[in-house]
Image (cartoon, rainbow, N blue to C red; front, side, top):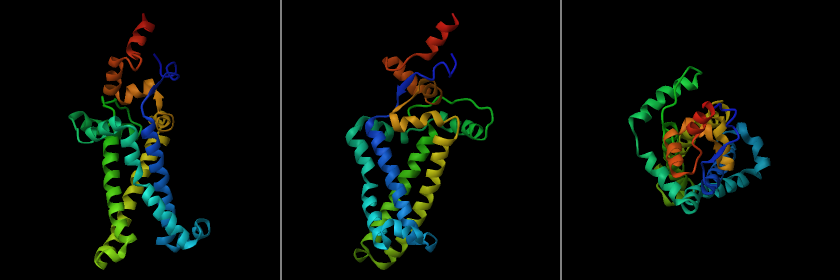
Length: 234
């Protein structure tokens, strides 16, 4: 059964809680980045009139710093089961996860590769999540002394500026990679609809998350594409 013939078959991948949390996280991150640019270099002073001047930029930065904390709670409250599954998978690593990266490099550079059976989150997504967690802790942890400098020793405040820059630098690198792999790279692009509608093409889900897909087939939630293919060939 070809991918084209199955392109209209969609399966649910993400909950409303995840979709909302992902959107809030993305929007708040980019607002934080944009509002921070003119504060760090005069090259972006042209943004000040748009942001309401230096004071307006700082105010927006602080507001969205608070918003940036909320996605974790949104997902946890709206979809606790999905949130716990994410946490469990982040600490669950198997041999197949190491094999995934070998094939992923081949896929990334356009060489012939094979799909390694993965669960709900593949190894690449696990690494992405772990790095995002690390950078978020670094950004938020360093941002607090910057916001309330009178509560901390001057040395802590000074180092916070350094750590804040390092955290955002790493985060931007991760975000660029994430956008490329989820939106631009042709093999991953079908999954982009998942973070907007919650659904992805069935054939794509089976190829990229075969173990999870098979589990859902056994539960009766997803169509058995292999079975349909055999019937077509009969």
